[in-house]
Length: 298
Image 1 (cartoon, rainbow, N blue to C red):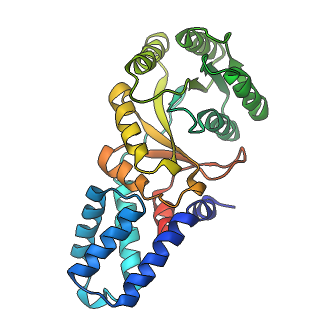
Image 2 (image 1 turned 180 degrees about the vertical axis):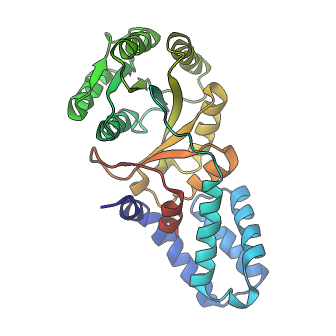
Image 3 (image 1 turned 90 degrees about the vertical axis):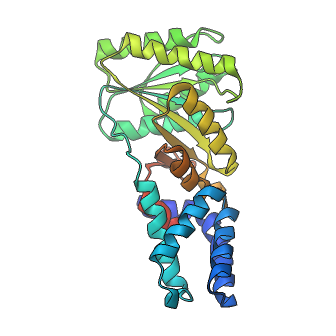
C-alpha cells in the first residue's frame, strides 16, 4: 500500500467531517459572502486556524469563478490546490549524512515509538543507525527503546536511569564517529513546553552534539500528536523558540477528525512536516507528502 492510500486512510475522520459539512453547504445553494463565510467556518471546524482559514478563503476568492461556485467538485479541487501550495511553500530539509536527528516533544506524543519507526525507515534505506537513549528520567524508557532497537536491528547507547542525558548523547555521537554510523537518532525525555528548566536541558544536549560532532548534519524534529489539534501549534512555537526546529513528525494522524491544524502549523510557523505516522506497525511512518495530504484532507 503506497503513502497515498495510507494517508487517505489516516485522514478519513477529518475528510468525513469536512465532507458532510461541504455537502450541506452546496445543497443550500448559497453564493457570495455567505458562501465564503460558511466555507471558512468549515475549515476552522477542522482545526485550521482563523488566520490560515482567512488566507485560504482569500486565495479561493481570487481563483474561483463566480459562475462555478455551485459546483462542489470545482471548489474542492481549488481548495486542495491552495492547501497543497501552502504546504509545499516550505523548504523541506533533505537529510544528509552523517546525520544526528534529535526528537523532542511533550509526554505521551509517541516519541519513542516514532524513533523505532524512524530507525526502521533508515535501515530500509540501507543506512547504519544508532539510537541514543537520552530519556533517562522516565522509568523503563531505556528498556522500551531497547525493544525498538531490537525490532529495527540497530545499535543503542544507554546509561543508567537518572544519568545525565547529555552524557548519553556524547557517548552516542562518539561511537557513531568511531564506527562511521550514518544516522544517530536521539531520544529525549518528554517535557512540558512551558517548563524553562527542561528546555534548558534540551539546549545543553543541542550544544553537546554541535561541539562534539560538528561534521555531522544535525536535525531537531518535534513529535506532535495530531489528535491535540491547535494545541500542537503552541507546543511547536515554544520548542521552536528554544532550539530552532528543523521539522515535525506527526503521530496518530489516523485518530483525529481535526487534521486541518497541520495546514496552520506549516503556514504560520513555517516549520515543515517531514514524517507522518499513519498506523501502529513499525512500517507505518512515511515521508510527508503535501499533495497527498491535501487530497486526503478534503
